[in-house]
Image (cartoon, rainbow over all chains, first blue to last red; front, side, top):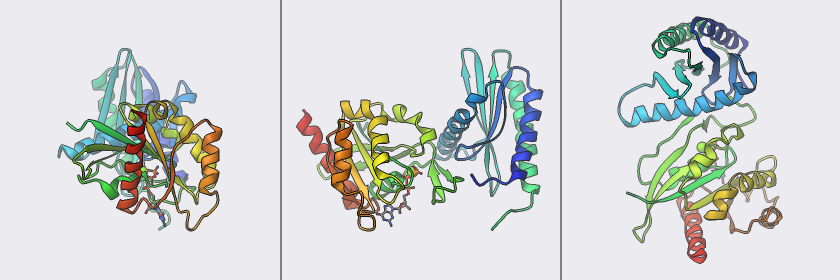
Length: 136
Length: 175
Ligand SMILES: Nc1nc2c(ncn2[C@@H]2O[C@H](COP(=O)(O)OP(=O)(O)OP(=O)(O)O)[C@@H](O)[C@H]2O)c(=O)[nH]1
Ligand SMILES: [Mg+2]
């Protein structure tokens, strides 16, 4: 997978920040748009790659739904379950758009999660934009 | 409502998205994103699904779905299989191991193949003559499957329509 180490470390920093900021967080995964995990913090590492793949599908289907309904750029997909919430957000970047996923158990509060996710996405997008452009 | 649903599958680069784009009469729904796997020599890859629609000459309408090809998206396969009446497996004969690919998709879609019709299209045979169509046939038979296998160039509308035509013939014979 072609992902520069600087992107990985920026992503890992954001993942750590988000993980400790939101109560009830089980996993935070940052992945490429095509579903490869590049940074994660989780209580169940076996899940990381599966979460990355599923989140890229969810983000892509969300994005296409937004385009079809003329609602613009995807910001966030939230999926609520009996005992938790999944939040999938796109991290916009011209060269390396990423997908950020947060998995919350029943202690998690959606409003709180969304607030911190948005902050993290903005931070990560800013640090990606500030990185020197690698390669072509 | 268009009731009949056909599903395209096969390995990454086999041309599922290309095939649906070649025949869809409505603007395709695409979920292709930048590919970051250096072993896949393609700029974009499908991570959700492809969707298109076609009306055949006899007036029959079909919804066309395509799966992502890469294995990590195999969780989409049963979801996309739901309600399909036919499966089109596309093989890229220039891939590292096309016979392993045919086994992967024959096995991965076994429930659908058993309940619906199936056809296999093998691409890039002009430049990659091995494995032959017979080799593909034998491999399919070795996993207990019998279905038509034809050479295709999925960029050609006529070739994709031929796959659908054969699939529908299979269905009629099943009835
Ligand atoms: N030269 C040549 N190119 C072909 C042939 N068939 C398909 N292609 C090309 O192969 C590529 C197939 O790409 P896609 O349609 O994205 O493949 P896909 O099966 O949707 O792949 P994933 O979404 O990654 O699973 C396209 O660039 C086609 O133009 C062929 O017979 N000859
Ligand atoms: Mg595709």
